[in-house]
Image: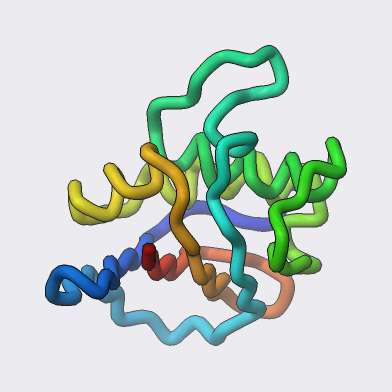
Length: 135
């Protein structure tokens, strides 16, 4: 069962070559879990080999690669929340309904970046995600 509904996304971009920019949500939700993942070449394509073009598709594919297909980039971390298929389905909505800088979105779509993901909500119900992107 889908345990998360999208209400907000906060995404930050961090690079050694540019200043940090962020969109931060103010919520009473608590941090449920945090994980770190590398967005590599295999995360840029779906299971049919079609190139993904949206950051939320790529982050969801990263988690599917980790849990379903066993394609893990070195140093990808596990998380309990997106181990659940229903929560991975909700991840796309959580990101799509949020906001992010175009620079951060471009970095994710191009791949070869690290993301740090914080999942916020109440109990086991995720409500929004905080993602930091760095190269």
